[in-house]
Image (cartoon, rainbow, N blue to C red):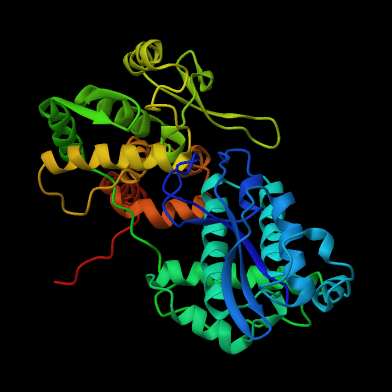
Length: 410
C-alpha cells in the first residue's frame, strides 16, 4: 500500500509552526509558505503493520525515494537506500492505472481553486476542509482516494461541530471535492450520497448586526482609555496604543474591509482620498472615498510602520496578522462595556453598509462597494435601517394622498 508522506514540525521550527503540526508537499507550494528543515515522516500500513516513521530526510525529493524503498519491500524494516527498490510496487502500478492518492487529489483541487483567483477567505475555507478530511483519512489509515465509502462520509459529516449555516456550507464543499474527483474519473462515483442533507436552519438568512453610533462612540472612548500596551513576539518588542487601534477601526469603518484586508493593507491602495477596494475583471476598479483626516492618519502611520502600516514585526502571514488585531480589538471591546450583540471586527463592515444605507445610498451602489449582490444587501441590512422604512412611509403617504375617499354614511 502507498504510504502517506508529511512533514512533522518540531519545537524549533524555522517557519514558526506549532509543535507536532503537519504539512504536506502541496501546502508548501504556496507563495507565502515559510520553509523549514523539520523532518519528513511516512505513515500507513505495510505487511499488516500500521506505523508512523521518520524518513530522516528534510526535503521531499530526498524523502520520497526512502518511502518508495519501504513500499518496495513491503516492510518498515526495508532499505532506506532508494536504490534498493528495483521493481515497481503493486501500489505504484495501481497509481499508473488510474488510482489517485488523497493527498494528490487535494493538491489538485486546491490548485484549481487557487487558479480561479477566488477570494483569499474562500480559499482558506477550502484548505481548512482539506485539512480536516486529511486528518480523518489519517485516523482511518486511508491513503487512496477510492478508499472512502459512503459510510465514511456519513461519519465524517456527523463529526462536524458547526452551526447549521456553517455545516450546510461545509457540506457543499464536501460535495464539490468529490464531484471534482468523479468528473476526472478518479472515482467511479462520489461517495457523498444524495440523501445527505444540510441541517435545519442552514438556509436561514444570517442576521447582520452593525454597530450603532452610540456603540461606536463607546469604542472610540475605550481606545482613548487604553493607554500603552507592551508586546513581545520573542525576537522584537514594542508598544501599541489606543491610537493604533483607532487607525485600524477607522480603516474598517470607512472601507468595509474585512479584517484580513485591513491587516495586510498596503499604501499603494491609497490614491489621494480614495482607497482601492478590489480590481474588477472588466477593468473598472472599485474605490471608496475617505475624509482628509483618515487619509492623513494613514500617511502618518506609514511613515512610522512602513508601506504595510498594520503589520507588527516581521511576519506577513495572514493568520498571524489577523489574530494579532483580533486580540487588540478584543481589549478595546472589553473596555467599551456591554453590547447588545457580541462585538467582532466584522461588525465594522456591517457598520459601513448601515451608514451608507441610512444616508440614502442606493442598494445597488452599496452592493458594489461590498462586493455583494443587491439581494444579499436587502436581505442582510435593510432591517437595520429604520430611516429606510420612514422614507417608504413618506412615499406611500404622498402616493395615496390624492386618492378619492369614500363618503361616510351618517
